[in-house]
Image (cartoon, rainbow, N blue to C red; front, side, top):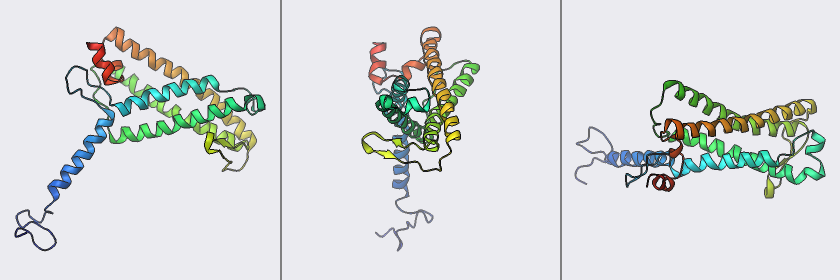
Amino acid sequence: MSGLHSGGVDRHGAGEPANSGLSDFGRTTHLESLRDMNSYRDPTGVAPRGYGSVAVAFHWLPAVLVLAAFVVGPGGSEQRVYSAAKDFDRQIHEVLGLTVFSLTLLRLVSRAFAPAPQSPSAPRWIKRISKVMRGLLYTLLVATPVTAIAGAWLEGHPLTLGILGEVQPMIPEAHAAGQALAQIHTILGDAVVWLAGFHAAAALFHHFVLRDEVLLSMLPARWRRRRLS
């Protein structure tokens, strides 16, 4: 108490708050916890450094959901998509697509606050292609559900949220524009699957040809340890 002026300022700290050290420690700890979401360093030193459990989940869960949405998607004309026979498939497709959309947005926020771990050394051209393909994939994972939502609303159809019910159109109906967006959505959906396939092939190329840790870094740490044991 004798070392403080009124207001809690340390006389020996050049006007700095007495608890500034604790505040800096809190901020540092918070940033480290955010980084841990995207990166993992095995305390045993056995597994190679890779992504954290949250980042791994953000990677594999959307991949599975995208494939499922592609399989159950009714496709075809508006009459076929919204027919009674395809109603269940359409609802599942919409719920899966919205889930992928939400996970993608969360993943982008996570990457903004928690940078990815340093990638293994590779030729510059490979890193450039990887960066471009990653940007394209994120763009498609956002644009594909956005075109689906806008297209459905422009056609006058509600959006299915599963057990949460439906969201009625929030924009004026413009049927021709909605049909055009529905066609774009189909093209983008196919592009997502093709790009994801290329992404998987590139990961296998890294693993079996370049023999680096790119694929291992996106596996759970337990699997990485098992792979090296």
